[in-house]
Image (cartoon, rainbow, N blue to C red; front, side, top):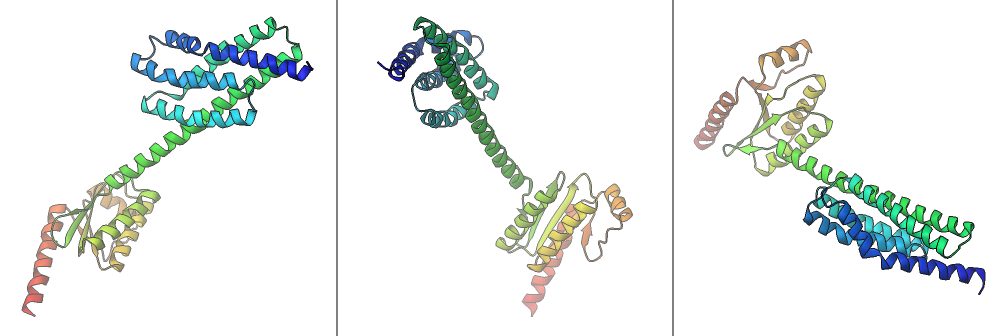
Length: 287
């Protein structure tokens, strides 16, 4: 038997040795985590652990690229499990570290028992370490991507909920603004105002600023752009809720509000706009 065939045989034996202890190794981790996780969590993690141990065992004899592909698929599934159970990334990394040590010890003991050359042992353990490192790599990437997607979705939902247009009459809608207005939110504000305003066939949109904490030049510019865009589609926008301190700040900044209808309160704006709308309807009827 040549050297290559001899080593392949030894590697298969080591791989089978690890595979045969898969359940035992999974149980070791279960026992170690018995007081860390709930029974339900530990049971759910069992299959995840078995799959990881199997991949590590196969990596001893398997083509390295095939192993990497398996780890990539495993990483995606593992992350879904962690996220669904609200477990942090360091939990999974600790699992990988545990099996690096336990399986690494098995490889060492089997190498000694089979009297492998130091060179062969070094090649095996180096290969195993690269597989473990790749497992951490794919797990981290999948975890980051998953949370990034969730955060983006949550931000989008929050943005939509933070820019509601409430229709109060046939021709009047209210857009209450709460919180800071940055470039991204102002773009969402413009899109929402234009889309809802035209789809609802509104004549007026009342922008209530009572919930906006700060009005500076940038915020004012964002708001004025929304007003100009609404004007282009035939919707008249008015401002309400400008608190005394905000009004003073706007004056000190030299912001020009000429041509913009403003009201001290939302109640006053609705009352005035309702009256104006009614007068226009009466006029059209008389004509």
